[in-house]
Image (cartoon, rainbow, N blue to C red; front, side, top):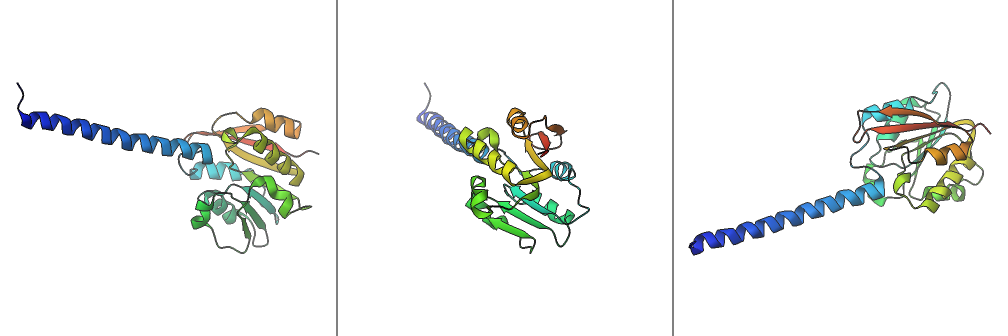
Length: 202
């Protein structure tokens, strides 16, 4: 027969296991919620950033539109490339990203949905659109609205760049621009990511 001392120890282990399980469950839920909201579990790597933004020609002044700011890694990369006279408009809906905002005269930071680009810029068109939005986890109607805004505000000949962890949006991007997007891949990212490149030919 086990002594009360060991019986109590067994109960403590059960309590500890339950407590640990609760913590792990909370952490897993937090990760899942982050994936749903932001489409990622970690900031994009410099390898992904460099490969994606290298698809733009920086030989002239540019008016760029960035959809999704996050921790600002893409914005920082773009600011290193664009000229002093270039401009970069950033849309970010998550208020928690305010703490990463970058002070630079070339950047206009808007805390609003990419569905409302036209409300801020009714007639403005951008040379290129760089997006980090998690289309795979957005409601279908929201994605459709954002895609329509992208097409409306992208200049003829301009590029739409988007990364994704699957080829979920390939058909939507093809239908939007009327041709198959170029697809690149970056292994050195968590998770590895596909990069879409589509030109506005109309």
